[in-house]
Length: 267
Image (cartoon, rainbow, N blue to C red; front, side):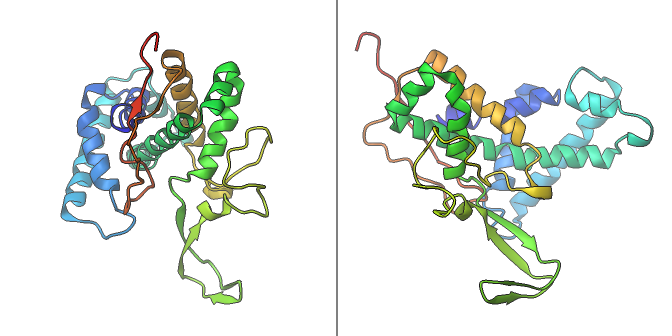
């Protein structure tokens, strides 16, 4: 499921929204996966630098092509803004690059974790089949449990004391938002999926001025995957003997694979 669905779908959504050729999907994925990899844990390698340059070059050429041949896609709509609100080419390029690095592998990871939990819990899956309105709260709970980007780097703007430790201004700190999603003081039975208590909340998308810009798109993609998957394949389970593993080290937490089995007709 990871390789044949979760890995492909977010990139196709991005290319379609921005009016880019879907047939360039595999090339695009190659650049993204090279760039993301373990970028958060190591310095840039020559391979990563080459992938970044190739991606920048591709986006720059496409932006110019789109200016000459606008369509009804999101990129064309942004380019059509004029006057004081008009975007520069650098701003458009930056937005495309940001969407690419922040919105593809993260959604891939979330799709994998979502189907992983639903495959392991037939009762929960049946509740969603009986009442699709429960899909959204289920997705929110899985996002809380499986933060695909649990660690967020920040720089302190002023000296601050945390738990008796003084952190000077200008220090690089790593905030583990994923741990907050398991706060027992905030969530009763924090390790369990609870869709009966509304608005439990989470920090999987960050918060405040740093909240994820693509959270609404990510939620819609996840909901559509569950709806359409259940429409075609309502019964599924993790393949016998399979032991899905989280990839580490990596820029994001995700499953390397998720082999599922479907019951045959009449079985």
